[in-house]
Image (cartoon, rainbow, N blue to C red):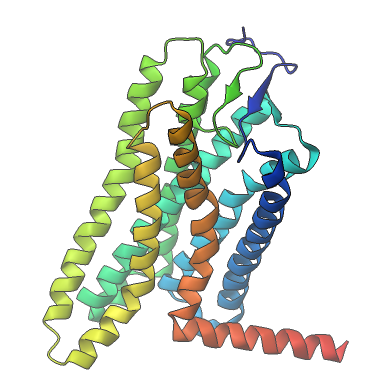
Length: 317
């Protein structure tokens, strides 16, 4: 058993993405390309916003922050999964597991809070346009992001600390491809009642409170849009929120299914849970850059300028 006095020699085994040997090569190539596209796409968003002064606004500041969080969020799980598939070893040291859990929770929760701040930004821009620059100034943006990082670190630290005090039987297999709260509690030899209560309370608060804030913001936004006299004006106002709404629906749909709707411990439910977690940790961060760039004229123009500037620089060399 391993308890509060774990040694560095203690390891967990990860269930992985699939138990079928014939699928490993395909999964490796698929997840490698998805990871490369996720990092490249989100990094391009950050560089395009940083290089274009016209995009130095609160909305794009939050978007760049979301892209950074997505890169870090994906990087906590996918590289390890790729190494496991390539080396055919699915073990992870105890200390490495807790470290992965801490950063996964930090960056995952950060995504949630950033989506809520972006909803508030849209609310101020549409419902209070004359006061937008006064309300959403640079100091306000920093003041909104710093507490988000502080709160996510506190939540992640709380969960990690509670997991640290659980006992685990040797060579237990975690039913996932990385260390997450639910799977870790399933393989614990200790009573996890306190962990489950804290998980329900904190996850409920971290997921549902921002979701309700987003919902209230969009109720006000829709009410403001309906007061716009022309149909063309309504469509123009709604188009500014379309990308954010798409990401919110995709992200919260998978997060609520993964953390607030626990499944039964059968092999079929394990496959279902893995698919949902892959959607949350890999697919959503991959799609975010495409959603924001394809539906946003300013982002498309900024990306084109970035590519042209890069090509001109390379030719000059």
